[in-house]
View 1 (spheres, rainbow, N blue to C red):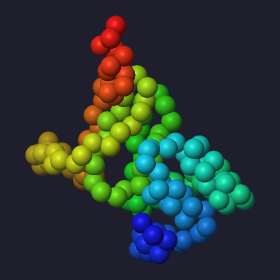
View 2 (cartoon, rainbow, N blue to C red):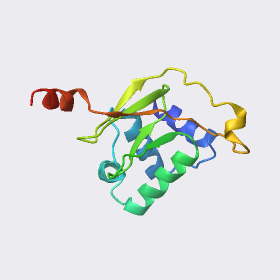
View 3 (cartoon, one colour):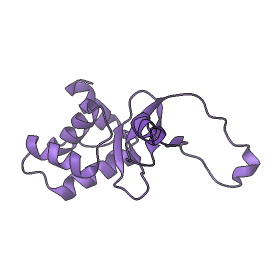
Length: 141
């Protein structure tokens, strides 16, 4: 995603395009993995040295609320962030905590009566188990 596209996506979502917010979004768009907030702060601080930790965390919160970024909750570990591009699911390794993208496939919607009066905003599928690397170690024992 180019610089104009990042700027437009922020503005279309009702967010001002500040230097810090732009740097966070740009880093996430260029990053192949799923970095933690602390890793994002370090990277952004290299580009915008006056950016504070609080500003980075607040920008991540705003980007998640705006639907531009997804936070992937990893039990017992720091949350990880992913710029929403192509739709995909996530796989989280129980042993090493790595987060990997899994190709998107449709998940059946729950029947209306099972939801009661709840209103579903989004549905994410998270698969958990052993990643390929940890599975090899596990099977070689």
